[in-house]
Image: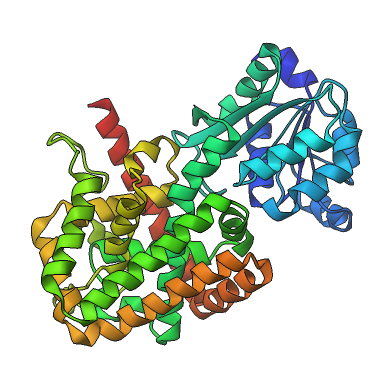
Length: 439
């Protein structure tokens, strides 16, 4: 990018939440001299204070951004994208490029197409990670809805400062992949957190929730609940494909649990084997695993219990049900690794780790069928998985927020520590995958 372009082209971001600020700061740091940001008008003075020591220019509202900027990104909640674009879109500068950063793309593209003037170019994007993650090497989806080659190339130049891996998709492709990966992954972790809360548990104090892959479950669940509820609600509720996947996950959880409590070992094993063979059977022997050893994962524990008190068998119902869900819907999660998020990579990693370790998988099956002391935990997980599926099916943002917030408040004292451990896990796995790619 030429110095002249960085000094003359004006970049604008409408919405100053986590990702809006992340984009503004990253672009400014990369040398773009005219980066503008705005939020709701009543947040204008506070936003100016937040950026007073920055080169980023704070504007009063979206009209000011739309009128002057050559590239505009709407960084607003998915549920509000249509109303915000309807308000500010008609004021867009002639010939500008406009996109959004929502996690559900079809409603966003529909809004941009409907409310923007016809002389405006539309190129949307979605960084497949949160604002606290290093964007280098992470997938960054780019959706070219309508744009000349020149304008499209300009967007790629602007976004190149993130050093992410561009993934070129349509809005429909993006929403299908995120439903298959993010939405179901979030539902599983949300259900874990709700079940722990319902049982008045802190999992790092309970032996069968501690050690190895359990550390991944606990830290990722805490990571999700420490974030804003609307990030997950929009993706689940506004994406119709996601509703199907989440409903099937809840059914898989319930179906497996019914076999567990009846101790139907042969039928249970057959179903797990068929699902595992479908998802993992095609992997080559030289496939590099996503995760490292179970011992290395021990480093990321919130527990202070002595090691000899840890590692009691667990049913891993959440993981068994995930593979059953993929099998039932005939989904291959490896096809979507190009669009992976850090959380999906972790989720895929521990699932793969379990199913490709015959001894661990057999221990899990035996615990699921015969360890009655953990059955209350599994029962509560079934209830919570169904509850989250029903919440998504009803499409109630208010209901989703209430369910999310109640659980989030229960665990809030441990977020700071779990966030550090979670970031370290993501960095470790990203490094491992980078080595695998280069070998």
